[in-house]
Length: 231
Image 1 (cartoon, rainbow, N blue to C red):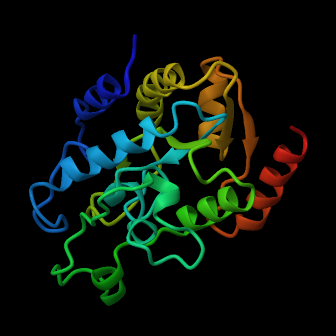
Image 2 (image 1 turned 90 degrees about the vertical axis):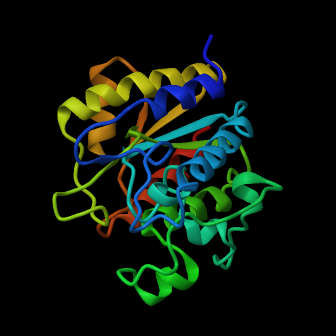
C-alpha cells in the first residue's frame, strides 16, 4: 500500500545526469542552505496530504527551474508561496504552514526580482489562476509532471530541457503510484502532447489540453473551462 511518505521516499531515491531532484539534491550556488531539499520535501508532503481526496490530477511535462525546482511542487512558484501573487494566497497551496523560500537571495547570479521575491514561473501563474477561477485551488486538484524531476541543459541549472523518452518512461512509474494515493475515478488531465502521449502509451486514460507555455495560455484556459463545463 502506497502512502504519501513512501511515495516521497521513492522520489528522493532517483538520481540521474542533468536532472535535479528537488526533494533530495542540494546546490550550493542557488539553494539558500543545505536544508533546502528538506524544506521542499516537507512542502511536497504537506501538499499531497491535503489533497488525497482531490478529484483532478493535472499532469504536465517536466519540473521547471522557475517553479517546482525551488518550491518542491509541480507548476508552483516560490513567489506564490511567499505571498507575492495578487490573487492566489499561500494558504490555497499549503493551508496554515511555515512558508519559506529555498532559492538563495544572496546569489549574485539571480535577477534582482528573483533575489527579492523568489522565482516566478509563468506556467505556475496561469495554472493557479485557472484553478482559483474554477474553485479548485484549495485542495481539490493535484499538479504533477509526467517526468516529476527538473531536467536541465548542460548550460546550467537555471535552464529547462524537454524530457527524453527514457525519462518519460521512468516518470510513468511515479504517475501510477500517485494515482494510488488519489480517489478512484480521479480525472486525469494531460497538459501538452508529451504528457498525453506518454499516458496513452501506458494505458492511463486522460483528457488532453494545450500547454499554457509559449503563447498557449488562452487555449489552455479555454480547454479547461470546457472540461469543467462538461462535468
